[in-house]
Image (cartoon, rainbow, N blue to C red; front, side, top):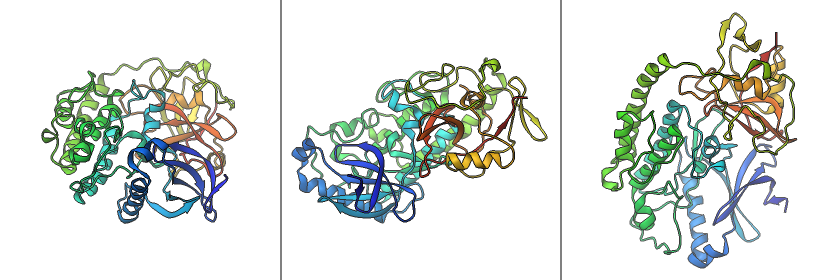
Length: 429
């Protein structure tokens, strides 16, 4: 099978209990989109029955077509293929689970994100949930893989397949788990058909905890010990992760206010901590490679100066402002003074950098801009999430820098692939 309806298949994005999701290309416009095709597993058909599975899929299509929010993914088309319906949905290359490194550690330590950005992501999710809750809807599956991220790091919440309309008397088979382990609220695991908005807010609390600390909570109502979690954080999680849903935030709006206050407290905490931070040893300048390579797809992380989650072991390099850019004296590299104002494909990035006599950095060069620190890393611009490098991973993928997660990752670099920003380099001098 090469097409579903009129849409050519580019690759497989995922497979769940109810549907398979493909990356497809719009036949006329030429840009990638996600196609969710209902193909329920036999066990789900036995538990719920085909009529109920189809009804739920149709309800998801109706909701996505009716609801409008800038942080909710859009649906563009519906159709049927081989007797089963499909949805054509907005596509983004990256979801929050990839940024955290969850595919490498489902329940173990993952990447910690810059707290300011993590809290911004949380507030955008809460904005969507506030709209859903106002219409009597509970998402029930707020988890990293359902939080798509645009090239500028903005949220697109997806997957309304488990949405609950409270009071509609949903019957859930006892063998069926509704939601995602570690993120589902305690009451959702016991009675998924009877939960309210507080269940979604609990999931957001887990997300914030994991994004900021790199760890899941130690259990319902229990934080993981982390040096970052001072009194304001502790008070926040005491409410967000409360076992009793009546003790959590009363609404998405109230939780958003608490996150905003937490963000303000974090800025003060960050300034004090960074004033005392002693820079760690970064990548040795002598080991910096300047010629692009293709690494291959094995091993998953082929760079010895990175940890298993793609993070440099040391701190960012020290840069000095000059008239024509930022100077890394230790490595003899001059960086462009500004990141590109928009994201582009890998091939476009090469041309864009070369127009003014720059080039894309290698992974070793680019990794000098990253580091394991909660202090601001350069380039710390609000619109920048990912930066291309010159190194390929395969014929269809290239390595890039996750400026928010402080890690090296990879994305599709084909003509209808992913988009990232550009920061050119010159040297070594």
